[in-house]
Image 1 (cartoon, one colour):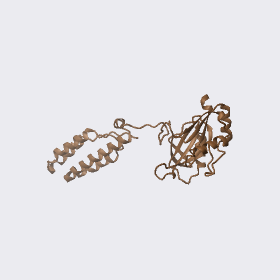
Image 2 (cartoon, one colour; image 1 turned 90 degrees about the vertical axis):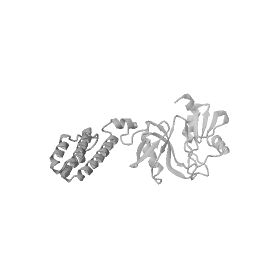
Image 3 (cartoon, one colour; image 1 turned 60 degrees about the horizontal axis):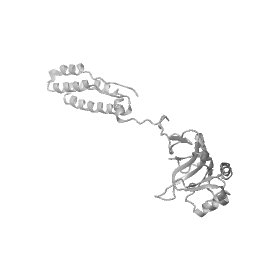
Image 4 (cartoon, rainbow, N blue to C red; image 1 turned 45 degrees about the vertical axis):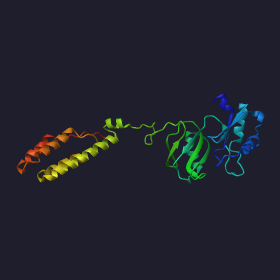
Length: 279
């Protein structure tokens, strides 16, 4: 923590449903926290964070006030909401999403302690639509001891967690997020996208081939062999020889029943080659 940060107190009014008026802030600072004007180097109203930043002349006094008054006082119109008072030392607001509205905040605090010291928790509210109504997001103010992953578990429930400066992580493996680009997916024969594309292409070719075979009852016995091969496909590319075989069949479609063996030989000579890569 820098020397300047040791001087700065945060009086966090973001836990309140609405911002207090300036005269209320003044009384709280002077009478509630016992800070005289002579003790101050500066005082700033932070509009984005909805707090008051107080720079003290004596860093020791700032630390003592934070220790003595953190979550001690509440305003008369919100008696159940204690006002956080702490040193401004790189705390972060972690927004926890997607949890049931009736899940107690205490349970969320217990889960978040895995990642550092929890200072406060509050229910985020709508600002424009349904103003003042909770939107289901819990905002946990923390001093992190380790990064919070993008997806956490609270009471066996999966939840999205976000905060400024967070490194996004993969939902499945927990490592830093690795988004496959289309170019990589096309080149990677084992990627799910490549596998799905290959199987779709096989299905199209198979159906086209079956339509041609159905037109000639003499080739009916070839279908089971093709079906057996296609049903075993788990991924990637159909060899160009498949198309060559289909062209050969097209050329031989004009043959009569006496040419049946010739057509079967054409298919046999141009076997379908499938490259299988498991994933």
